Picture 1 (cartoon, rainbow, N blue to C red):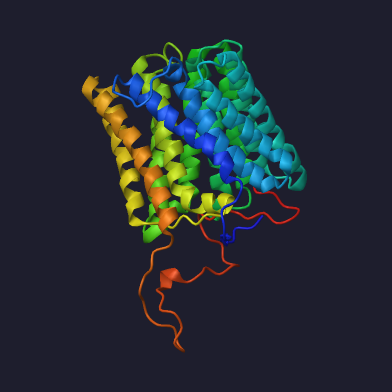
Picture 2 (cartoon, rainbow, N blue to C red; picture 1 turned 90 degrees about the vertical axis):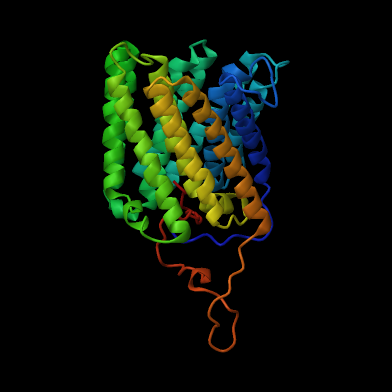
Length: 407
């Protein structure tokens, strides 16, 4: 495993094809969000509102993670997972296709995704990989239960666990300040989350409390050691990434507190608690982390440069503002209009981020003027200098070499 910055190759990778269904799932999920908020939406289909959650979690985030894992595996069969997950997401919004068929494809996709970790584990026996495998298993369990007719709201704790553990494992790999024993400690936290989910099957009330405690413990452990606490004082892309990550930790901690406070009757205790926990994790934590790492992960996977620009701050700030309005004013104080406005701002934030990223990729790296190189070389600023290949860089994507895995 290498923490060296990835040199982006010229020309887009064929993997870009797998991004198309993921992007469609994102757009469909946001369209469904507008419908659920009672706002005008570009597209209206019968199944959009009821599939909103699966579109954005397994359909969008699941496909992205599976594509990154397939890239690390470097075997053709690894791409079955993002292909099936993307296809399943698309079938969710295709009304002529029976919903059961779409659910079955998602089960196949999550099963393929889970099995990808087996050859990765054979390459490198690593605690972080076990945590990601456990998270993928939770996604598979959620897909199977959904196929079996379990209400989506009752599956959310399993989907929370999938997303939280996957992202936490990535942070442990990237944040070298966590130390050599971090993988084992992360695995202990992961088993704590697993125990909480199992308790929830027998007692939803106690399970919700246990899950809240587990999320809080994991958040404070990550926050205590994550290098983002120091790099927030840096400039440019480094500061942007740190701000997004610290914001993500805040919302995960808030979700843990909300689970503790809203658990007398189990999960979900109230509609407000359900909404607050769900969007604190899936928007505040997951999407904030995606915004943070997109400029480094996507170029490594797709071979398309995604230069950082100051404009990336706009959707990131808007995302967190939307959650403050929705969760604090809407869910917390019961102001209906704030709930609607916050939801609409969240949709706008994700759309603006997608447009900003696409525009930045098309325009390419910004041209800056700086001091001239000795000997008459190109004028470049210090920020333009390539990083030392042997120097660990926080937040960069790992480029697996032969015989290693990108965990």
